[in-house]
Amino acid sequence: MKQTYETVVIFDGTLSEETIRKENGKIEDFLKSNTEFEKTDVWGKRSLAYIIKKKKSGVYHLYIYQDQSEHNVAQKIEKLLKLNDSVLRHLTVIREIPEIVERRNRDFVEPVEADVEGDEQ
Amino acid sequence: MMNNKRYNSRLKKVCWFDQNATQPDYKDQKVVERFVTERGKIVPRRLSGVCSKHQKKLAVAIKRARYLALLPFVAENIR
Image (cartoon, rainbow over all chains, first blue to last red; front, side):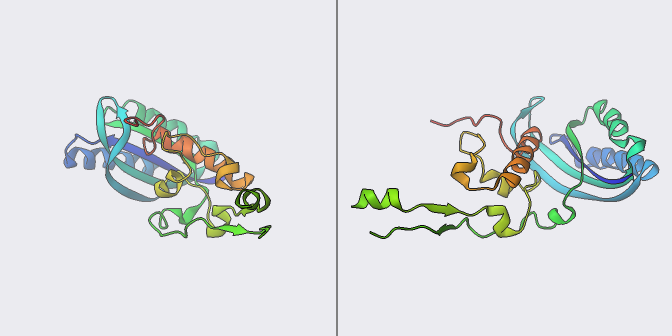
C-alpha cells in the first residue's frame, strides 16, 4: 500500500551551513532515488528543549515522500541516519494531516468555556 | 452565596481541537505547548476539556515532540 511518510531530521547546530547543505543533499538524493520524493521543509535553527550529545541547538529539516509500505523505507533511512554523526535526532512517521505544515504558524482562537448549566442564584 | 454559585454552575468545556477544526500534531509546537504544564507534564482531560479522541492523539503528539527536543521531558530552572 502506498503511504506518505515524513521524516524530521535534527542536524547538529554547531555545523557550518555548507556541511548541513551537503548532508541535506545526501538525504535528498537517497530519497529521490528510492522513493517518490515530494519536498523538504526547512524549519531552520532552533534551540533544543534539552541537551542532546552536548549540543544546545539543532537545524530542523522535514522530508516528505511517498512509497509502497512493503519497501520498508523507514528502516532504510534509519540505517542511513543512524550512522551519520551530524544528525542528532530523527523521526519517521506516516503522514496523517497533509496541510498541517502550512498551518504551523497560524493563529488559533483562545480556548473558550461555554457556560451551559450556570445556576445564577 | 458566592460559594454556592461556584458549586452550582457547571462549566461545560469545549474541545479546543474541535473548535479549531484541527488535529494534534507534533510539528505544531505552539499548539502542543499549551497542553503541557510548566513542569512539562501533559495536562489531564478534566482540566483542558479536550475530548478523548483528541486527547489520545495529543498524548502521542506530545511524546513525539519531546523526542525531537521541541518540548522538554522535565522542565528545568523552575523554582
